[in-house]
View (cartoon, one colour):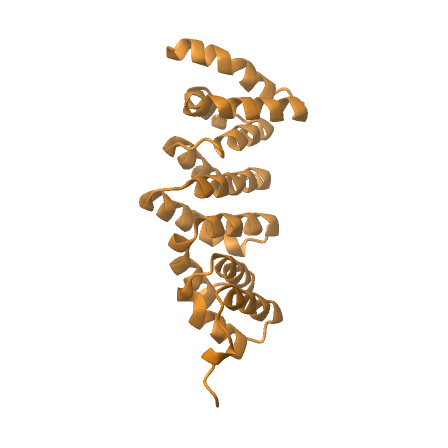
Length: 207
């Protein structure tokens, strides 16, 4: 099928995104997903729209289209001025992480998401944590660095992500949090992570 017929099929769906009807927009976004990468030619230019609602719905669709250009757009949207746009981008990056990224893409995503763990917008921080958790092992070094040097809020999000990932490289940091940190929530998530990995008190050296 040539590009022109594909674009003509997609444009009514794009129009529905901009209509202001959430039910119609959700259906259109779902239908766009069925078009996959073929929809990118129409969707990507809409990210320059001054209408944040339209951009939100475009990012909603891009979040589930496994394509490098969709990923790049989501990473760029993390720097948008509107909180809801950044949140949607972080959610989309979680979807991309779940479907699988190559090493370079994962590295880009980790670098963009990790600084968001300390954001005052705690929903954005939580969504960034979820995306890093979905990335898994590639995110561990950055999470450990945040755990050591980040703000209290960022450290807590990093520990929650590490607990969910269950990578053994985090074991020393988790024990340090339990024995040296006076933050109850940080200790709680450290204990959760150790329990998930099946690490017990036998790892403690007697005083």
